[in-house]
Image (cartoon, rainbow, N blue to C red; front, side, top):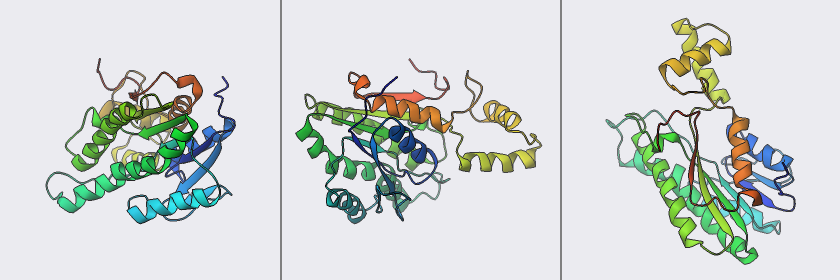
Amino acid sequence: MDLQLKGRTALVTGSDRRTGEVIAATLAAEGARVITHGNDSAPPGADAVWGDVRTESGSAQVLAQIAARGLSIDILVNNYGTADAHRWEGSDTAKWLEMYQTNLLSAVRMIQGCVPAMKAKGWGRILNLGTIGSHQPVAERPAYYAAKGALANITVSLAQELAGTGITVNTVSPGYIRTEQVEEAYRRRARKAGWGEDWASIEKKIVETDFPNPCGRIATREEVADLVGFLCSPRAGFINGQNIRIDGGAVRYV
């Protein structure tokens, strides 16, 4: 399927590693000009920018680098975001503010910087990377899940705000993804628990203990990137204001 992305310019935040890197590669393979982004340094490649999008100044720095090249964004993928293992006990105000700056306001600033050019063109795509934890939060990471829940909320609000502009706004909410970080953590756990060395055995235990789902595995980065690519394309023009889960059926929600 041709996603009709030739001639479009995309910005993928946090695309210097893991899922963001694969999303950027997927959009590029479909013909888009992709601007990659790193928070601390620019990834390799001519179309790369850097700046700490957790801050006002860093966000402005990213947008200024794009403008200095005479480019404007057609497709914005707010992929950047991080979590940690905080719990309710000991999560002070600073932790909550950190998670909101990282996982919500970073996206808000990029949206505010990119939307005017999209409006002028009469076309645009905004895609926010969420998590199924905003549907089914657990005891750990309350500030992270709250921030991601707010990200899904602004998706709906922004879609209403941009009615009639040709810009769509959606959230993609993955479950567990097989990134290097996730795999490394589970391989360490597997060695301690005696789950075996091969990934198939480890993945089976992940499904049994942590992430039960009808597909019996966790997502690949490529599967998440393919969904993002489709939603960023003209072919998905009537999908708007949605929070689409890619979780193998883990969340039982109608």
